[in-house]
Amino acid sequence: MLVTKYNPYTEARRGFDLFNTLMQTLDPVREESVISSFIPNVNTREGEYAYHVELDLPGIKKEDIEITTKDNVLTISGERKMKEEVKEDDYYKVESAYGKFSRSFTLPEKIDVENIHAESKDGVLEVVIPKLKEEETKPKKIEIK
Image 1 (cartoon, one colour):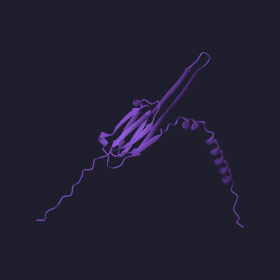
Image 2 (cartoon, rainbow, N blue to C red):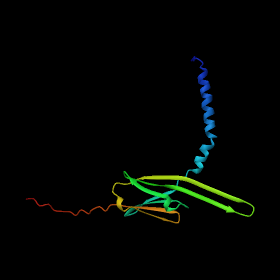
Image 3 (cartoon, rainbow, N blue to C red):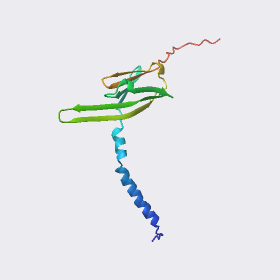
Image 4 (tube, one colour):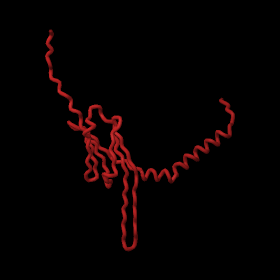
């Protein structure tokens, strides 16, 4: 049988840890951050001549979106500002949704960074990342002198 010395501080700490965990789950600030966060859905695909990244950004203006490349990473970020307002004879309702978003993608090595272009249509942003054309190497006969 193992005999251990009773330490009241250990028991008290265990109680405080349980209390803190409970309070964090009830924290209203944490719930607001979950509600206001916005992570757009992304589809990526590889074509013959380019890579395509499509983001679902309904209701977001192209002026509120920023696309950058740095250190072989493509970053698409912006802010969603949506406000729905309903005025009726017997009530008035306003719902707002705000949230910043940022998605980053590591780019392959052989891409044409200078010719990346983006287009936004019907709430879908498409970023086209052209591949570098590999120079065709023709077989060459080397003459011995």
